[in-house]
Length: 377
Image 1 (tube, one colour):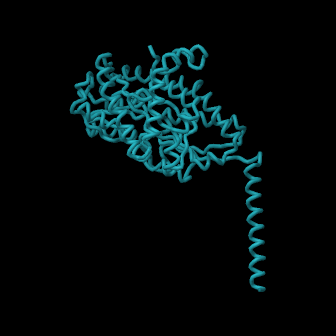
Image 2: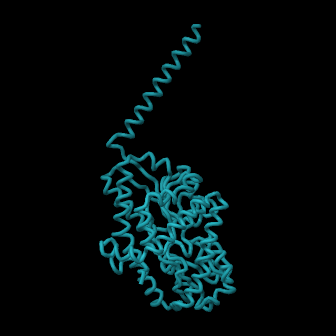
Image 3: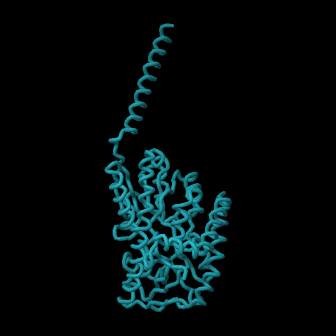
């Protein structure tokens, strides 16, 4: 009997200590003086506009939060390789990741929304994301359930795609794709290449230069900044202005447990600052840089090739159907066909509404002429 009384007493003491520990932790969490120290990793190098613009957003959050949150920043995949980064942020190795969603399409198909026939325009994508909570929940759903990650914030844009090719491997018309080996970001782009008669080679940005230099590929489907950021000016002969994809999704992935643990006040600050940054800082900066990179390519001797409207229509007719079908089928195989159907329906609605929405956003001053990409006209 005495032994049981001793055990009972120890249990009471243990419970009291545990309760005090929880109370102390709760007090710490609720403390107005608590500083949240957050680790942020980007797969992009320091010179990449994805990194510089996202880092500027983090600066704005720190200022708005008046020191309550601090971001420790790691560019160039310093904490883990690109392909493993989604798992790492989901497990809490770091709290925030800026990476390209297409890298993880085999794991989370619904996130690979940067396909031809998807969102019609970067501004349309941003407006719908920032103003439609249901859309944000749909975008996060599979990431949350598969990887413990949420996507509550808009990312920095990437310009529409172009083709940066070696000298003698130019793409001037649809038939020129045939027989070419071209870098593919993965996802739906490889089957699109197959339909066009080209072969896709899966490469991440840091591999593009060497692959072109060694002849592993004839060129890359990339973005105008790649001639500068990845030094493709040294190995390329031409740039073809064919926007097969109007916008892609290099997302800001956030560990779900971390996001939930933040006080509501800080979550609201991060979201509200994200809106301001999207329209006033990020979008004009990406638009300006894209224009400068096309000028740079021409000044440095690259042949600038523009597809005719007729040839563009041929490519988009093929790529939009293949891209959309691939997206829906891949998501269905992963058990998220219903989510993908809802996302595609929102994309179709956004495409239909974009010309009217564009006029309204211009009238309200949310976007300004010359400071956003790809006007409806």
